[in-house]
Structures are given as structure tokens and as C-alpha cells.
Image 1: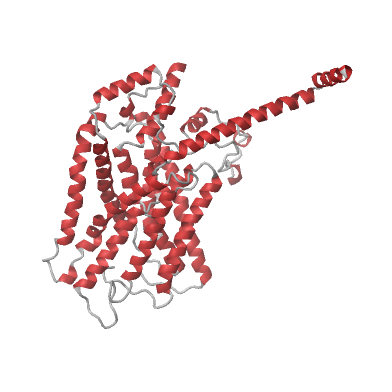
Image 2: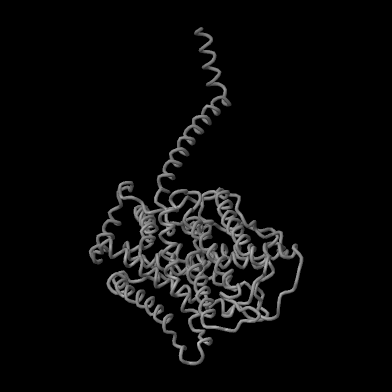
Length: 498
């Protein structure tokens, strides 16, 4: 027995292949334990997700490493051979992705002790900042959402009017509003300078200790930035209201039913195959441009990083936050008064009141949709980390309301005239109110910018594809039932406020 055991031990020590297998098993065991711990930490981290907790659309460290790498030599370029289309690099890198799950506000009990440099910066910032109560912070957040929801709605309506012209290459005018909102969302998500004074100076590191302090600062800044009222107003308020998922899905259905609005001329009859191609075109163009705009906005933030454009911290806390309370509620109340007493009421007959239908009713309903989206995502997104339930719910809900209002607006006696009826003030007002609900409430309840930020930020690609396909598929199914039941029975009538 002793000889047998000694021979076995000797064979193990003398056989390098067996020794490597043993080391590989130990390494695999340690890696499995590490992956299990990482999964548990990731599940704990994803417990407090909200709409503004979506990660930046690109990895800054990965981009900085790409900048440091030298460009490999290209024999074709050295020999003077012109580069062809096949010489372009692949759009997706084969290297392991460094994308991480969503970041959120880290609890103080789970944080490691900050470096001394960071503590000093925090003390200076805390000493310079006046204390703000929790209720005051909530008031500031709601006020910013109300104010930027109004601005985002007006910007969306303005872009739609500017981009809807004869000969336009794309007749879905809401596309450019979605592109603009996604660019701004990518910029604000990646930027580190605008709200830098919230956590002191972030000068360039020179030593290893400085690099450690800078890394800790960047981690804290990323999480704290998403709790700043102004940042919430710019992203959730303005970007979310500038983009509209319900208008996008309405255009998808209208492309399917051959009712998509054109600047001049009428619709030409076509078969179902062309309608399917139009449906796919609207979906692909909108999603592709929105995702690429998100990345472009992040690249703009990286390009402007050396300029160090910063919003003064004291100005924000002492001047802008209190001022926005009066501006937001004053603008909203003024819009309500203008809807009750329109300025053009005495300029002609009652049937010529067009002021309310163009923008006033929209900005009356816009803050309600924005607040609904914010609180729904705040309470529902954390339930399923791999599927942002809050954003999905408000997008589907807003799309359903959009389809119902569109049907009512295109029915005789409510928003449209019958063949024998004449224009009345009640029909005009009902048509304008329905248009305001679609442009204001539905447009601000649903969002494209947050949707594509979540698609880009989900940890696994299959989760992103499932989330995106479910959002588009469920919304389109509801519109086929709601709008299709009217379109393919009695047809749409022209609304009087079109």
C-alpha cells in the first residue's frame, strides 16, 4: 500500500499535465465562487433602481484605454493601397464586454472608507452648501419635472412643425425630437463636469493615491448625480418629455394602415406587403437612430470634458432651486388660465380659436404625464432588474391612451364632422382637448430616451432584446385592437383641428 501511494504521488508530481489540471480545477472553483459572490452583490445592488438609475451609455474607462492604445500598422495603408469597405473594423468588438449592471445610489453602510482627499473635498462642499430638508428636495424635484416637462413638450411640438415639410426624406416628424432627446440623455449620463462641485474638485490624478481617490470620487459622483433635482429635471423631465414612445408607436400603426400623414398630396393605395415594409422601416429607423444618438451624446460629453463646464453649486442651491418653484408652478398655472381664457377668443368667431389646440392644452397635461412616469418608474423598476417594469408600464399605458384619443378625434360628432354637420365650438374644443392629451399627457408619460438608455444599459443582450421586443410588440398589439377596429370598419374621419 505504501508503494502504491508513493507511486501515485510520484506520478502526480512527475506528470505536468496532471499538475496543470489540478491548478485549473482550483482556478475554476475560485472563479465560480467569485462569480457567485458577484451575482449576489449585483442582485443586492439592483434593489433600488429607478428611472434615473440607468448607467451611462458607454464605459468611460474603456474609452480612455482605447485612446491610449496605439493604432496597429496597416499593410495596405503602408503600401499605398486604398482602403475598401471590407477593411473597416467590425461594429462589435470580440473582446469581452465590460458593461456592468445598473448602478444605483450606494448605501453608506456598504461603502468602503473614503480616502482623506475625498473626505476633505466633501467637508468643503458640505460646509459651503446650505442644509436642505427632505421635503424641500422633493419639492425641488417635482418643480424641475413640471418646468422641464413644459419645455420638453414645447420643444417636441416645435421640432415636429419644423421637420414636417414638402419633400421631407422622413415623414415621421417625431423622429427628430426622439433623436434630440437621446443625444441630450447620452450627454447628461456621461458628463462629469456639470455637477462636479457637488463633490469637490476632480483634478487629474498624478500619483497612485490620487488615482485611488479619483476612482472613489467618480463612483460617488455617478451615484449622487442621479439624486440632484436639476439633473432629474434635465433627464427625466426635459429629455423624457422631448421624446415620445406613444407617438412613435402611433406612427408605426399608421404606416401599417397606410394612414401616415404626408406634407402634401394624399395616400396611395398599396398592398399588405408594402405596409409591412413601411412598419419595419419606421421601427428600424427610430430605434437605430435613437440608440446611435445616445452614444453620440456620450461621445460629445467626452469631447467637451477638457472644457470643464460646471454649474456653480452655490448658485444652484441658493438661487436656481428656489426660483424654479415659482417658475414651474407659475408657468403651469398660466397655461391653465390661457386654456380657460384663450388670447384669440375675441379675434373672430368661436370656431376660429386655434391658440389652445396648438400648444396650450398640451402643456396643461404635460406635467401630469411626466410626474406619473417618474413615480411609476421609481416604484416599479426595481421589481425586475432585468426588465424595467416601470418604464414598460408607462409606455404601454400612454400608448393605449394615445390610441383611444386618436379614435375619438377621428369619429364624427366628437372630433370630426359628419357629411351634413357644420362646425361648432364644442366639436372644435373636444378635438383640441384630445390633441392636447395626445401631445401633452401621452407624450410625457411615454419616453424613448429612457427606453433606449435602459436597452443599452441592461447587463445581458438577451434581456435588452426581450425588453425592446416586448415593448414594441405589446404596444403595437394594443394599437391594432384599438385603432384598427375603427380604421378597418368605418374608417378615420378628418378632425376639425388638424
